[in-house]
Image (tube, rainbow, N blue to C red; front, side, top):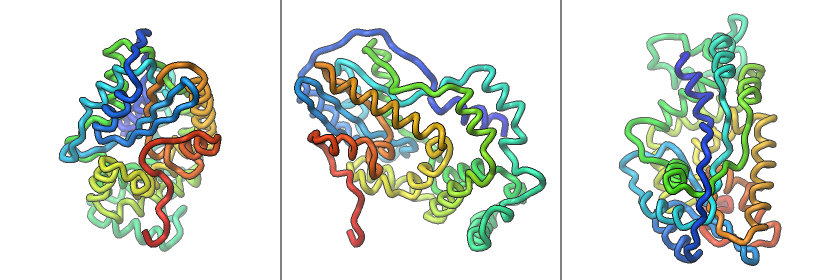
Length: 316
């Protein structure tokens, strides 16, 4: 449990930033090469400024092949790279998590999941957990139980995996010494406070969505990755895994989510105000959700070139 919680805090994103060395290849070459990777790519032009958005997901099974080499070439040809939001987790933050392990990892006051879930949801959870040898899960925090369901029952983060587009972009930009910066930074104290101070009820929607994802079965993660590789962005956005993660900490946290939106809005304004090609990588969930980054760009009257991301209509 201790290792899980420390890894959870640190994996929000570890900060790094490379030195500047802008390159100047043609935009069309960048876009064509990036599209060859299999990742969904969008291009937004505003005068002599161009923003290339790369949609990323994590948890890609190894047998779902894509072509990171093409994306690496596109990254090297950009003038500047934007990486996702970073969480700056320091030693003090990790020690605070360790100190509060019991608070974070278990439900308070001898309560169990049945004290928070409605009877029908508890019954669905009981069916999923029937194979467990121990009943310790009943006392586990709703958030960690939700993550366990997503990973173990919905097939996310199981077995050998391919690198995500976000990992490829970060590593390539660093190795190429490209001008690189994160979209924004969230302090470790904010992340830790939001994790420690949230009551169990704050994670109820997360657990319910995780139950739905777990009921979909272990093939869910592979089908999601196949949809991503085929640029079926709308299908990725409504995957049970993405719907669940969008309800969970830290992405659904009332303090962190507005910071994420604010940082992205500022970064996009800056990128489209400078005469260069900026390549940015973000989660498909953040880009394609209704009212998300792509919708906001389109609402500004900008032409968004790339795969359709709009929600799947009923009956489709």
